[in-house]
Image (cartoon, rainbow, N blue to C red):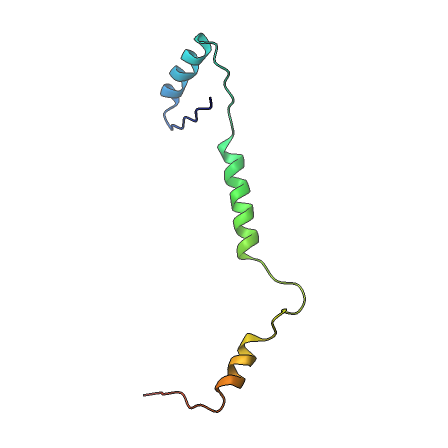
Length: 76
């Protein structure tokens, strides 16, 4: 069984860890900071993504201009 406990209260966590030790429960502590840094790196990679080479479907703006060049846009 796996149980994940999260708390900002150091005293409460110390009590839980002490109880777990008395009950011979194995404790694995993960560093949340490492996970947050990894999430931030992934987020930045997604936000700063630039495709390499030409687009496989061509220029979308050019296609739209060609499709609409014979129609007047209703500007009131």
